[in-house]
Image (cartoon, rainbow, N blue to C red; front, side):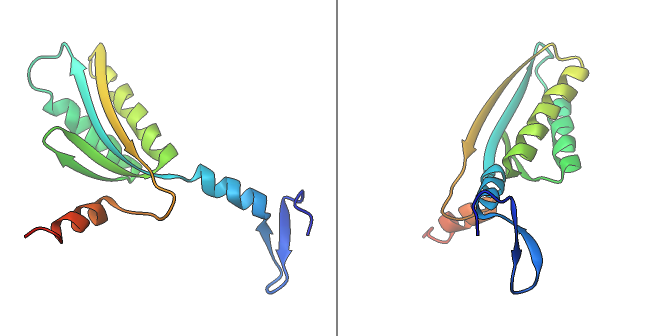
Amino acid sequence: MDDDNLFHVDPANSVWNLSPRLEEIRQATEMKVIVDLCVVPMGVGVSVSKYVTECQNVLNEAGLEHQLHAYGTNIEGDWDNVFAAIKRCHERVHGMGALRITTSIKVGTRTDREQTMQEKIDSVTEREV
């Protein structure tokens, strides 16, 4: 098989598949990520709960797994989908009248295996005494 071909036929079932090179690119572009996000609208007063609620709505609409916590939200999913949702959070919060937003983002990825937020939590709580 020539590596320059984009597709090849699997002889076992006569199905067209991506070439090994394209499959590698596809997997690289579907990187899973866990993000800790804290969006803070500035100049809107002391309470920001309505803005946090709007970002939670964005994450729900995007179908992303997420967990709200006291100082932000953990989000997991495909890199592009998560960061597209973060952009939409900014757009919505600006649309609500916030002229400035400061955002803190922590990002975690791994290449050895997929790991969910819950699996990370469970790996700690299982060791607690």
